[in-house]
Structures are given as structure tokens and as C-alpha cells.
Image (cartoon, rainbow, N blue to C red):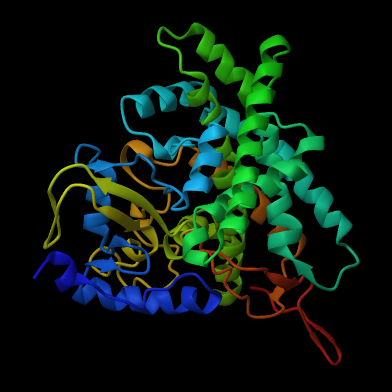
Length: 417
């Protein structure tokens, strides 16, 4: 029997809200019985334990990130993307060295932790202004009304996307994200072609903005990258430069917005005090990783755990499962911000593809939550949130709260967290 025959496990279906909830229990069982299993639904191997996941993420010799987001199965969709110069790489996480090392070094020179920290006053002011607008509201959706718009404006400010283009870029980015799960979602060719058209427009817009910055530099990431490009001994190609930005739009807003909502949900559910906010964000990243997984492809025969894989096998490294591994974390399903090994989680990846925007994500999330918890110290959950059901993103469809506490027949229950 082949390794696939021995290790295939059907039923892992994280494509619906119910599937997201069930996936946590399924993966908990498989971590103990079949820690590296083949999922026929994903057409991929899934790595569930922390040690194995950490090893795969670090080992770029045996595991390729090329095409990590996957290529469309439909040839017409693939042709439309190729014609629009949207490559299989299409973003920084989809390249291997030496291209990846050159691209990341170029972006890292411009996208520094200091640049991320410099955005904190703007994030705080924007959050306070939004909270002012909800002063008379009895119920607020923290995810869609606060976290998402702030995360979007922050990443657009950082990159240098004009306000007039932001709504379109958000829509195109969302469509591009859906395209990567289109087959799993059961979308037909017509629907996939619409999503592909959005992906092309997002990349074209980034290319157009870069061309405009050549003549008129501004204080933004587009201009900073072009300055680094001009000084580089080995400049990037035009496609490589463009590929630095679409992924920042998608991952930048999804990570921050969902981590705000996930953290707040956990804090309100467990009545966590605000004195451990930074630790609470780290623990929320571990327990409810905003991105569930990333993909690799084996470059050579390789052994993961007790499974021998040939070259060319697709491997899904599951952050969410690895971050609940009892071999690393005591009471892995509990929300414990005081854990001694708090920062050993894999929510932002590991190795050469560690999330380059993690510093910005921490600034955004802590700033937004500080403002929320200061303004509304008595807030309470208004309902039990429903999972979004995206195969890669771990988040909710909404997060509704009562800002001043749970209503009662005689007024409000001002119980603090």
C-alpha cells in the first residue's frame, strides 16, 4: 500500500462555518492518530503537529513555496491570469530563493518596524474618531464597523493607495483571495473568470501606482521600494516589484482585522483584564490563528514525522493545529495569556517566509483594542459569532457587542470584564 492509502483521512472540510468549528475537533484527533495525513478534499497532505510544522516552514531546501497560493485548475482562468501578468508567485510568499531572498530584502529595507510604529498615532486617531461616531449606538459590529475599515486604511496608507481607489482595491483583493479557494468552494468557470479579472486589476493598479511614483515620489511604501530599487546592485524585475504589494493588501487587512475580533472575543468570553493586553494578543494569535495554514511542495523525497513523501507532493502546514499541540502547550485549548512559552506559536509563520508585516499587525491590533477597552470598559458580547467559513482564514462573519454592557429589564448590567 502507498503512503496515501495508509494515511488518507476524509472529512476535513473547513469550507463552511460549521466546517470551521468541526475542523478544530477533527484536527485534535488527527494530531494524535495521524499527525501527517492526506486530505482528498484538499488534494494535499496536512501537517498538524508543531514540531513537524516548524521543520517544514524552516526547510526551504526540501520544501518549495513556489505557487504557495495554488494555480487555477481551469486553463482559461490560468490564461487570463498569465495574460494579466499575475504569476503563480503573485505575492512574496509564492517565491523561492534566490528570487524570494532578493524580493524580501528589498521590501524589508523599506518596510521597517520603525515605519510600522510611525503609523500608531494615525491608527489611534482613526479609531477614536470611529468610536465617536458610534456614541449613540446600542450595538456595534467590531469586526466590520471598526477593525476592518481601520486595517484597510492602515495598509492603504502604508502602501500609498489613494482614497479614490481603495474600495475597488479592497473588492479586487477579496476576489483574489476567493480565487485561491475557488475549486474547493465549487465555483464554476464563469465565476472564476470574474475573480481572475479582479486579480488582474489589482496587480495592474499596483503597477500603475508604481509608475506614477517614478515621477512623483511620496512618503509611502511604493516610493520607498522604488528608492531601494534604484540603489540596488541587482534590481528586481518589474513583475517582482509589483508582486510585493497585492499580498500586503490582502494579508495586511485580513490578519489585523481578524486578530482584533478574535482577541476581543476571547477576552470578553474569558473576562480577561486589560493589564495583559499584549500577552492576550499573542495568546489569541496562537489559539485563533488568523490564517489557518500555508502550502509547500516537496522538492525531493522527504520524511515528515512517520510519512515518506516523494517529490512534487502538496503539503499544507496547519498553523491552527500546530498551535494547539499538547506536546508544546499545557492545556492547549485554553486561553492563558500568562503562558511561559507564549511567543512560540506559528501564527505568523517561521523561517524565511516569516510574516514581514507582523510588527504592523501588533501595532494595529494593540492600538485598536486599547482604544476600544478604554472607551467601552463594560462592553459585552451581543451574540455568539458565526465563523466565516474561509478555508484559509480563521475569523468571524461579524462580532457584535453592546458597548455599555448587556441590557437588562431595568437598564444595563455594567459588569466589567
